[in-house]
Amino acid sequence: MYDTYTRGLTGSNPVLISFFFYSVCLFQKFLYIRNIKLKVMASRKTVSVKDMIAYANNQLSRVDDYATKEFKSGICTMIESLLHMSDNYAGFMFNKNSESEIDTVGYYSRTYFISNKLLK
Image (tube, rainbow, N blue to C red; front, side, top):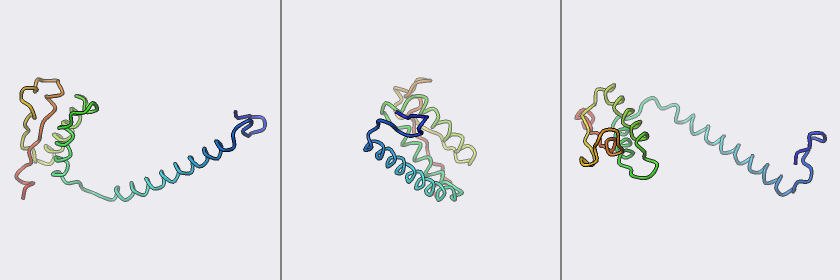
């Protein structure tokens, strides 16, 4: 327990205290390493539209518990905006036509096509 009058830990196990401080030091090192990686990635100015389509198609084909309707809807909104802004929209197809009713997981389970401009 932390005693505010003596400003110290009283009645605590010294092993637990040293483990706590060791954990804090490891977490600080993790944050430092993570910041270095973020700075390296922040210098990149562009992302390939072709790579983003491949990533989106991979995410939209997932069938696990975390690939919900809301998740897939967000991926569809993002990739459609990207494709229209870059003038590369070439349409999509449903992964399973039998499960393509509006506002279902199957409706957002789709594959986006790559524009002919990106294939060159």
